[in-house]
Image 1 (cartoon, one colour):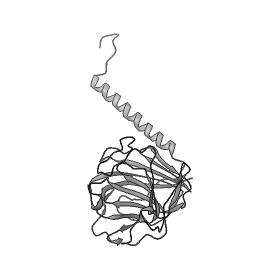
Image 2 (cartoon, rainbow, N blue to C red):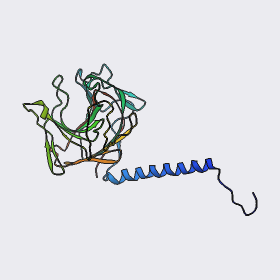
Image 3 (cartoon, helix red, strand yellow):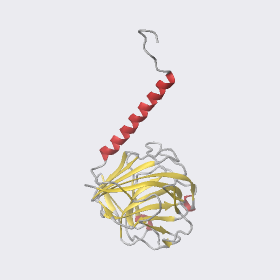
Image 4 (cartoon, helix red, strand yellow):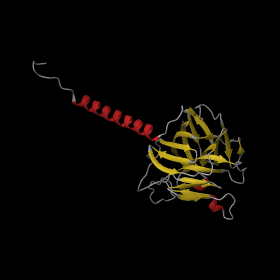
Amino acid sequence: MEPGKSARMPPSLLRFFCLLIAFVSVALSGIAQSAKHIPPHGKLVRLFNGKDLTGFDILLQSKGLNNDTDKVFQVEKRVIHVSGNDFGGIVTQKEYEDYYLRTEFKWGDKTYLDRVGKARDCGILYNITGAIPAPPNGVWPRSFEFQIIEGGTGDIWLIKGASLKVKGQPFSSQERPPDDSVQYTKAPRFGEGPWQNVTGYRDPVGEVEKAHGQWNLLELVVDHDHVKYWVNGKLVNEATDLNATKGKLLFQTEGAETYYRNIEIAPLK
């Protein structure tokens, strides 16, 4: 090197360092955002141990309880693979209250039963109260749902007697109505656009899911009768005055191939 001249970094190396700095900045920003919006809580504990479904019961509309001969739920490389070829879910054997729940999900490709040609659908039921219905009389117990559906992930569904308020507006469902349709009531996620019940649908106004096949982070805070939903770090729903404040959790199978991983829960402080 000639005296008085400084060394220059090769362009390829400079580009690499610029990309590395940008990646680290985005990652740190995401961590800071996640830490900011979640209230203080205890240590996260795995609900799913990554090896098997210890701690869960399997409920299927066609088979009843703990009789998954068709392997609707399978553990593969620390991931729960849900075939979708039945209705029901894995249900925690314990009840929970005042907690922070986080998990990741992504869609598979297959759809079954009445979901063929329609938006892929599943969800997480929480604050389950009362007896779980015995097939063939349905499989959805009285509960609240963190909806997972193409174009509408983050909706709140109220099931069979659940009720709450969103921004002061009451929403409720009936446990034994004369018309089955009012057993289920939806409180749409914030900023939701028009929805179409077709496979692969994405919200043209405010989609919060990542592209098909990518992992999405779901976060749920249940603070007595107050709940908040986040999808990929964005607050998508919030409700108060829940008429049930504790219960079991159920991770659904509802006609669409789905994957779950990193299911963790922590008590609020």
